[in-house]
Amino acid sequence: MSWPRNLSVALFLGSLLLQGQDKAPKLLDCHVHHNGQKTFLDQLTAKMAAADGMAMLITAPADIKGVTAAMAAHPGRLVGVGELRLDDPEALALVDRFHAAGFRGLGEITQPQYPYDDRRYWPIYERAEQYGMIVLFHTGIVNRTDPNTASDVSSDRMRAGTIDLIARRFPRLKIIGAHLGNPDYAWAAEIARWSPNVWWDLSGSTLIKKQHDYRSFSDIFWWSSAATLHSPKSTANAFEKIVFGSDVFDGDLAEFDRALERYHRMLDECAVPEEAQRNIFAGTLWRILNPQ
Image 1: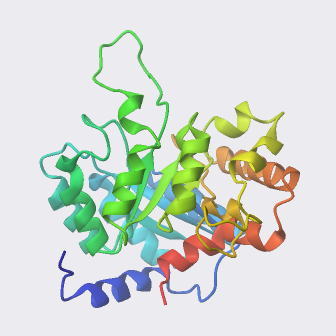
Image 2: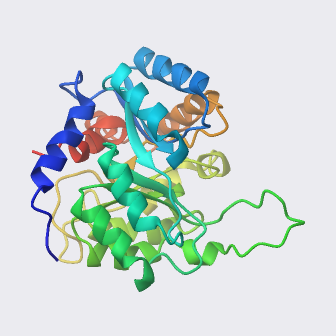
């Protein structure tokens, strides 16, 4: 696999989007959906400023201009994530277009016609890897907005297990799986345990469903103190395979606060150390976006 000659320049230019922020914010949300309205951009950037936060904003191609303008007007508050469909015949061109606009990621990838790890999609992942982009995948069960209308959508094509091959085949590709593969939590965690380029967010219904059983996550992220040949060497807390994501959509910024409260409660009930929590809420993603 060849890397483009201008990769270092591209990564440098991408890092300029985070200008005005010389250290990690307190919060870095990997999963916010833009609703296409300028009023939402104004509300989101104000929310991020008040929280010392930064949002990775999932953006449709039609909204690139408005989002790039908002990023320039509010340095250090927004990171562009380009929305595309894997089966779009123009998908590769869209990757190039988002990259040229200074976007740092792609997603939320969802509803493919084939499993995520199907070789038909490999050129898209290769291009994203070459550009140093993060890819955010929807994983696990997916909603049915209109059950009375026939659709060609299968949650089985979006299982957490499909991330494994992608992570191994594209080891420099930074992957975030949304929703911890709901309900395949154990599979999701085990894939991340062996893949240094995979993390998961806990947005969506999981922290609502599990609110009376948060301590069970200690069994899923079990390997912090394990000294065994059957785990990769790491000094990081196992919970650091989680990153913060709110899954704000339809302009509902109150979900940001609800998700934040759920994360804090789960991590506190599992006695996750403060340093690990700082990485979960911002540090890990900050280092991905600002490689040394």
